[in-house]
Length: 307
Ligand code: SF4
Ligand code: SF4
Image 1 (cartoon, protein in one colour):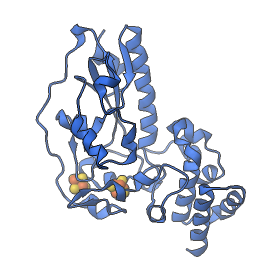
Image 2 (image 1 turned 45 degrees about the vertical axis):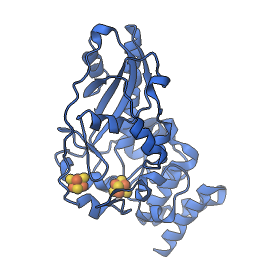
Image 3 (image 1 turned 135 degrees about the horizontal axis):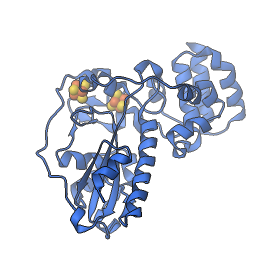
C-alpha cells in the first residue's frame, strides 16, 4: 500500500499523517464559548472515541472560488466533493485492510499546531501555495506499523500581514484588533430558516460569506472559476425560493437542506439584490408557508417593497 498515492488518487492535494492527537486546551476553550456551535460535533477525547486508531490523516482539498459578483460561495460545493473523495479514500483503505473512520477533530487547530497552516486575523486558515481556499477532511486510521510515518512537526509560522482589509470589509464587524468574534460573523447565523435581521441586511452571498477571503491579499493569486450552466440553474434564486432545491442539494449535499435554509437564503439575497421580479413568487410562497421560514420570506417582501 502506498498511502500518498491513495490520497492523490482520491483527489486530495496532500495528506498529513499525525499521531492520534490530544487537545485538552482546545476542549477547554470550547467549553468557555470560544467557538461557534458548529464546533459542538467535535469529539473531546479522541483516544476514547477511536481507541483502535494509531494515526490521524488530515486531507487537503484546495478549490477556486466563484467571482465575488456571482453571489455564490465556492466552499460548499468543494466541501461536498471533498467529503465524497474522503469516503472513497476510506473505502480504498478498507480494501487493503486498513480501518478508517471519519474523524470529528479540530482540524484547523491541529494544522496550526503542526506548523502546516497559519491562522490569519480573519480567523481563516492559510496554507502556503494554497491561500485560504481549501477544505480539510480527516480520517482516523489503523495503519500497519511499516506505514506509520508521521508528518514531522514544524515550527508555527505567521502569514497574516495585518493589512486590515478584512477588518474594514467585514460586514458584521467580526474582525477587530481584539481578534475574531464568531458572534459577529454572518456565517454563524446561516444554518436555518431564520436569521437575525442584521445578518439578513448584510448577506451578499448564498451559503456563507466570502468577504474576508475575497479581500485578503494572500488569496489574490487564486483565479476565480466560472459558474457552470449546471450550477447557474441549480442556484437560481427563483428556483430556490420556489422550494426546488434538489439540484442544489446534489451539488452541496443533502445535509444542507435544514428546514428551508436554502430557500431562506435565496429570499434574503433576492431582497438584497433588489430582485423585484421575484416579488410575486415570494408573496406566493409566503402565503403557503408557516413557521420561521415565513418570517424570512416576509422580511424579503417588505424589503423589496420599500427599497
Ligand atoms: S486581509 Fe490582511 S489582515 Fe486580513 S487576514 Fe488577510 S492579510 Fe491578514
Ligand atoms: S465570513 Fe464574513 S462576516 Fe465572517 S468574518 Fe469573514 S467577512 Fe466577516
